[in-house]
Image 1: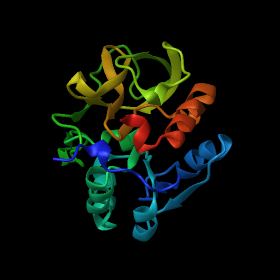
Image 2: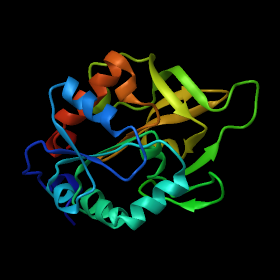
Image 3: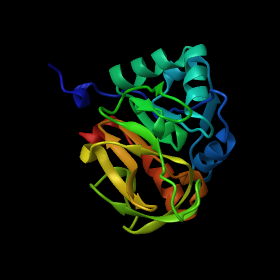
Image 4: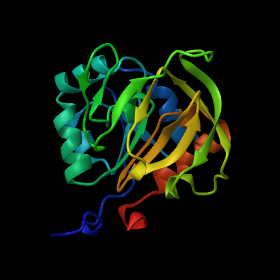
Length: 220
């Protein structure tokens, strides 16, 4: 069997931001522009197939997001491009949650299922306000090239009522809001953050830059 990283990426950097009707796409595009890269907002299957880097942002409800991905034929396409072809992937906020197996937001919904035993659950009611909005400290859990040149214990910007619950095998960052939760993951070519790097100033832009500079070879 050929190891995933032996399937060499021959494409130059070609970044696409998936447009599936779930918001904040332009701010992500501007973040890439701010660090010297162009990124195309698209739902065009042909453009996505040509991409080397795929970004799935999003704000809103999990069920609506999965419905849109299915209606646009993007669920199957993303599986082929990210899971089979091993293109570099970055999920942001809702985009991170969508790669779980399921979510319990307003019912039970099936996700993309890229992270085994991962589910999306609501913060329990407590003295803390829900949603979790604002700056919070992230702590490194495992080392990752996504955090190159970023010191540990730095603040990032969050907006969410549900969080990613999974075994810590792929966790690269944790945050605390009433209790610890996973806020960043890496599985081979798949990266994702619960926080918004595009809204997290200097260190957030460094994450965007680090992702854009990745090649499949750098992960091997």
